[in-house]
Amino acid sequence: MSALVISPVLVPLATAVLTTLAGRRPGIQQVLSFAGIAAFLACALALVALAAADRPAEAAFGGWAAPFGIQFLIDRTGAVLVLVTALMGTASLVFLASDADTGPRHPLLLPLVHGLLAGVGGAFATADLFNLYVWFEVMLICALGLFAIGGRLDQLDATFKYLALNLLGTLLLLIAVGAVYAVTGHLNFGALAQASEALPPGLATLVLAALILAFLIKAGAFPLFAWLPASYHTLPAPVLALFAGLLTKVGVYAVLRTLGDVFAPAPELLYEALGWIAAATMLVGVLGAAYHWDMRRILAFHIVSQIGYILLGVALMSEAGNAATLFYTVHHIVVKANLFLIAAILWRLAGSYDLRQIGGLYALRPWLGVLFLIPALSLVGVPPLSGFWAKLLILEEAIAQGRVAWTVVALLVSVLTLYSMVKIWMEGFWSPHPDPQWRLPRARLWPAYAATLGLAAVTLWIGLNPQPLLTYAQAAASTLGAH
Amino acid sequence: MIWVLALAVWVSVTAGVYLTLSRDLVRIVLGLAVLGSAANLVLFAAGRLGPAQPAVVPLGETLLADAANPLPQALVLTAIVIGFALVCFALVLVLRLIRDAGTDDALALRYAEPVPSDAVKPPLPDPASEPESPK
Image 1 (tube, rainbow over the protein chains, first blue to last red):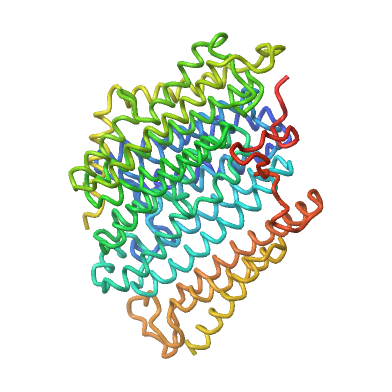
Image 2 (cartoon, rainbow over the protein chains, first blue to last red; image 1 turned 135 degrees about the vertical axis):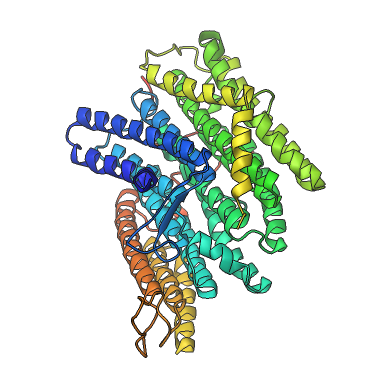
């Protein structure tokens, strides 16, 4: 099965190369891009099937056996995240065919999107710490390309801020990887798991704190998230949805992989600190969102806020916590990307992302309002949508462990999230449009509706039938940290 | 020897942080490049300096007396290549920013996040920085 295990990297990378070669022929490029993402989706489904059958795909490269060669190992956790990655790629590529805020069609747009997917897929597939760092760099350089490709001054400004702050994160990650290698002599996850048991707790705390700090910069946790709201809103919508869904979640996945799996049980201080960081992330993110009126900026701050919930699951330091984390991550990627895409439809129909300048959509497009409410209420955690089950799992475990302060913060943040979503609903749909001359424009929106309806269907399916994903997440969590 | 390396790391981190905290865009990029060198030195030191066992000794072969661990050197090489590419990208980006914005002062770059004029509400979006408005 060594051919399948490299598919999360190989398929998007090959697509990126082919679409670059076809750069002068937009039609062929488009076909290649769809073929590539379809192949990626098929490979991801096969990987999930293999992982679910307890035969995780794995391979070690370069003719060296596992602890020495770079190893790819896609267990249940990695497989479901690769699947969601492929799903997000499909949704944003379909959305790109509409004319709702898709930006200028630069010939390098599709290659960079596929390059980004390769980086994300590689990060979920690898079982090697240094290799993980390399995939973070692949994601970073592709992300920078996608930021700068539009060439508007605000995009260049955002690119520089994203570059400077993320580069600091990757440098810290590099130093931390060096430190981990220095104290354990290993980079492979399996070998690290065994070597870390012999580490003195003081040394382990120091080295792991540096590693987790680097991942937290990538995840956008408090107080290291400044790069995220400073830059995300300058992206065109389909790319923004991809970034919002996937990039920060790779950082979260890395935290889960290190604290929940490879180095578990790590020194308790780290989990305790992570829990308080998670609570602060939730609260600060949601308060930042409350200040803004630009839909993209509101939603960008909600990414930060939701990262807090996911980190809280890791901080609970238990199997149920890890299962909740995985469930929450899958739910959140789908919902968050969908919200950004629906915001782009609002922009196309009503003329602006600023809530003070739009309105009146409910009278003309009532079903769009319903479509918006599915991911919006799911983000808040209203039953029976997917977010309700995700939050229930996390809070159940937090209460079971007697973490009252974290639970209270999480519940309070849910209410404040509701405030933001109601703000978008009231201003975008309910209130009349401030410009009396405004008429609904003619737009080519069916690909946008197809993408958002598909994602909303996933949200509804997880919400109405959470058991399959929950069983899967619990099975995934039971193998984490078992070494 | 390790103390010389530690001193070198200390000096480059200090210089890198100092430059990165500057308001001048080119200095920020140079600072990040210097910090990258410091990270590479740390990575290099992770393999122990001087004679040490290599990561793998093939069966039946004996270890040379003054062999060093080759793995961190491979890692440093990878990191140098990646760092070089990113610094090149950053320099081109800074040139473009200086040309388009007419300034190299990081505090003057408020195009993505305009300064609020109202104490309570954020500024209305600037039409020039919005995506092309739908017709």
